[in-house]
Structures are given as C-alpha cells and as structure tokens.
Length: 278
Image (cartoon, rainbow, N blue to C red; front, side, top):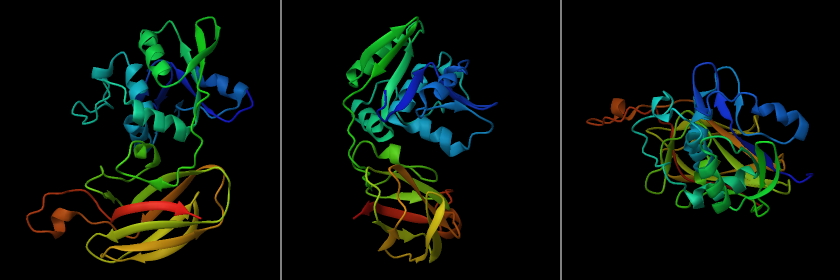
C-alpha cells in the first residue's frame, strides 16, 4: 500500500530496560518495519525520556490500547494507581482525533491474544475494517482518516493531548503552564511559509525564550510577565508533523515566591494560545 500512514501493532510495547508500556514480552513486533517502511508507533530503546512515556500514557488512543495489552497492569510500576485519566472506557472522540493526527491508518492485531476480542470491537467503533488475515494476524485498515491540517492547540476540544510534547502541566481554565523546556506538535499538508503565534505571559518576571522549529533555532524573545502575543516567521516547515520547542532561560517554583503557596512545580510561562497561520 503506497498510501501515507503509520502502523500500530498489537502486541507491541514501548519500553527500555526498566519501564514499559503495553505488552511487556512483545519485542519482535518492530521487525516488520523494514519490510513495510512505514512509521511504527512504539519501540524498544535504552532509557526512554520520561516525556515520551508520558505521551503514550496520556494519548487517548495509545494510552487506551497500551493499557488494554498489559496483562499485569495493576503491577506495572509505570502506571500511577491514582491516575486521574479514565482509560477503562475508550474515549471515541479523543481516540479518533489521535488517529487522525498521528495518521494511524494500519493496525496489525494478533487474534490469539487475550485482549483481541475487545480490541476488535473497539477498532470497529473507531472506523477500522479487517482487510486481510495471515495465520494468527489480522490487518485492519482505516480508510476514513481526516487529513486536515492541525494548526492550533485548542485546550477546550478533544485531541489536544496528541499535540502536546514535553514540559506541560495539566490544562487549567483556558490556559496551560509550561516548564523550562516544552514542545508542541503541529501538522501541515503543504510546506509553506507561515507565522507562529502564541499568547503567553512569563511567570514572576521577564524571561528569555528560544524558539526552535524541528530542532533549528528560529527566534529568541524576551517574554513579559504581562499577557502578550508574540509572532515568529517560520520558513522551513515540512509536510506532516512539525515540532516546535520553547526553551526558557529560567524557571521558578511558586511556593518559593508567593507567600502561602504550596505549588512545587517549576514554571516558566503560562500559555493561552499556540498556533501557526498563513
């Protein structure tokens, strides 16, 4: 299949030597990647950064099916027993947004696994159809992906979690705090010159931020502690997902600055809006 799209396999796992998420013992799934040549979600590597495991845990699609595949979920040290997110039921709207954003067109399912029956029901609800079978494996394809560009982080709508990378606190009432280093993922279909716009205020005092597009610095700005909107010209966007990093000069702990405050987060800035536009 020459069409664009990424592959999600069940069983699969995202793990290093100490922590895992998914089907713990399934390390051979990614051997198929060199054959089909398509991006594969999950993998085995040394010392995954914490923000990457958090991305999988919190994503409505990856988070749900990763938990579904874990036979010893209650014993997995990577899962917080007080996890405020409810993954016992599939979030159809959020999962569909994630599928569209990550381009998960293909799912390969081992129909002998204990979770296969539940997975079939849920994949069908998400718009997948079984295409072919070989031995104990079935290939499911979703031909109804929404290929629209994803240009803004909208905290009041499903799907925003798939667009948040590292360094974010949980969203609050119309805004979200970042630490010293944070990133967002935005998706375009046709590479062109665009403008990054973000409405922001630094915590406590003026703070310098470096802005990176796909790991290349594009601007250095002084961010005010009063609410302002900043603009950065982007000349080298690529087709697909683009990553924008914000790296601040400093971060501050609220409890060390505000009398009577017990917040121990390390904060740099408060964002109300992030997006790119023509």
